[in-house]
Structure formats: C-alpha cells, structure tokens
Image 1 (cartoon, rainbow, N blue to C red):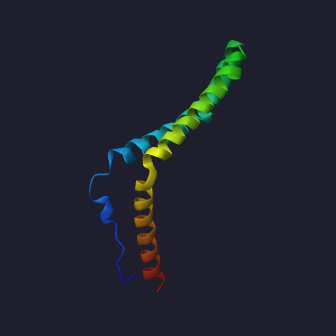
Image 2: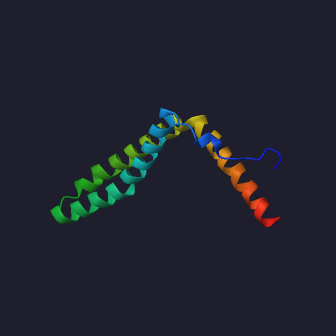
Image 3: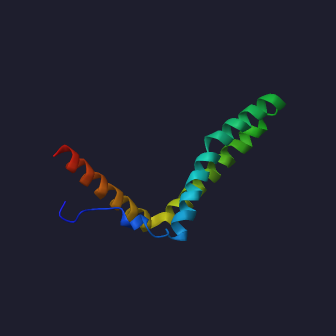
Length: 98
C-alpha cells in the first residue's frame, strides 16, 4: 500500500516477444480442439476416418508446440506484467474494503 501500486508498466509499448507470444497463445486455443472437432465433422461427412486418425493428433500436437513456443517467448515479461496487475488489484481491493 505504501508503494501505491499502479499500472504504469502498461503505458509504454510491450516488447515484441510478449506480443508475439500472446498471439501464439491465442492461436494455440484456436488450433487445438476446434480443429480436431472440425476434422471429426469432415470425417463423418466424407466417410474418411483417416482425417481424424491422422489429422486429429497432428493438429493437437501442433497446438501444443505453439503453446510451448508462446510460453518461451512470453517468459519473464509476463511475470512483470502479471505482478503489476496483481499488485494493483490487491491495492484496489484493500482500498475498497477498508
């Protein structure tokens, strides 16, 4: 409370690694289970089970590779931003409840 935690870290531009990592993180969610489900639907429509047998695990594994790359890119920068948000949230909570 004495330090008056604020969100000034968000006033500047975020590093490119952080932006790219967050983009890959979102892309990971878009390519994970939705692609597997779409391949399942395509397999049912075309009566070709190999779309799911081969494509499903491949798409799912690729989404995990994207997640690992995103976590590596974001790295310590995310901890700085997360710490700033949590300190600000705790300060706001203490001010409102006190």
